[in-house]
Length: 163
Image (cartoon, rainbow, N blue to C red; front, side, top):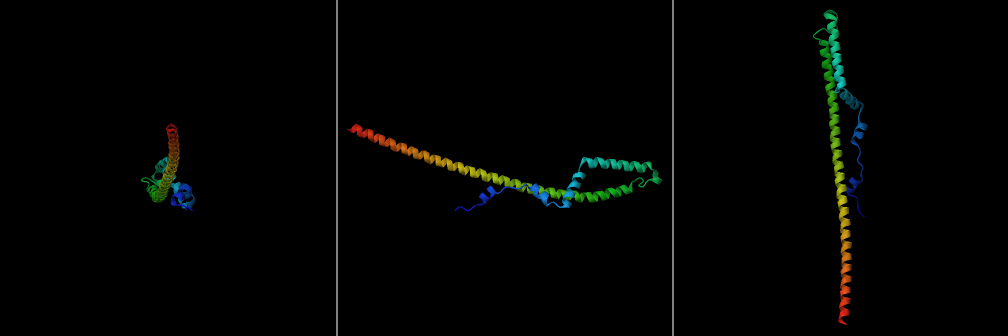
């Protein structure tokens, strides 16, 4: 009885989508980091933030130095921007780390797919070689039968001519 080999196991084991597995294992923090990084690195965020900065500066300049909540040089705005950068940078790095994990998992998945394809190709070559060997053996057998028949026919002809 043939025991299954690693090649048999790899050929018969379906591969799973690594993205589904990672998405299923993602925590709330992971999903939140991905969303924050997705929004923080978008044109919508950049344009919205430019509009916010222009409105902030315009409001504080037009309100006058005595009535402005954050008069020029906008020290409170600098504090807000520093806090935003301090929070946004690690969140984006968390998302990038998750993406790097996904990339490593996808590379492993690609390797497994390529390995399975190579094993399948090798198995097909073995099957083709077996079929070719069988066909050659059958051809040799038929040729041997034809040679035997020819030898008998020649022998019969020789025996007729000797009479």
